[in-house]
Length: 321
Image (spheres, one colour):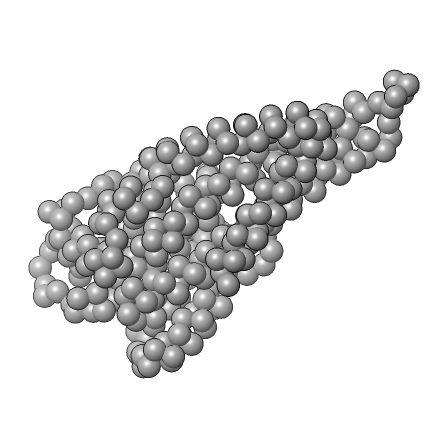
């Protein structure tokens, strides 16, 4: 159902894009708009992963840097039957994570320092399984295409505004109807495109939750992690995300302040809805809910430990190994 919904929404966005191009310039306008969008998509497809990792100051790590965290990702990738992605850490106090890359062979997963400090081992495994699910489902190219189309529609809308303002009838007189239609297209087209883009993003998050829970084998781990991350994301600002809101859809939980609502204008489903689905999935799996630990104050995360640190302590067993 999620895949079918995504396909329909992408078809709707493509149809909107072509219709807007036709309205502005007929067949030539539609063809020109399509060429521009294809060029933008090709660039985004090949370079978006590097751009977003650089945008967030992500630092690539190897097994020597964080042996247990690195091995956790490797074990989860093996369980998902996919290549080992590059692993990155972001020096940010907000708990969050994302995946990027044009395909499983060229993928990267990134977690913030805040996430590694705040979550326990099984919760970190649930989060990284979710990110690997995005890679396995090839969600990054899907979201790149939709984001590019949304941007192209916005660009076309600006042309539509100019086209409407200068519309003339066959006798060279100002065309009031053309002006109204041009202005309406300029206002409505980007709004509709944004709504479709957000709907696709929410659909892909639900699917990544489901597949990620299957990869780690413990839906309650991801449910517990989402609860902690959502609380932490609302309490701790992510300055880079606030400066680049167009990248918010990449994260497992919306990193923007006040972005926790499940509405038409949200890039993520409401956390409580995601948790409810995961707990229902756990019941169907026959996984007993675990006692929830006391909430850790988001503003004072614990010191790094467990599978992501290089310090001492016995390795905690979990659903990944």
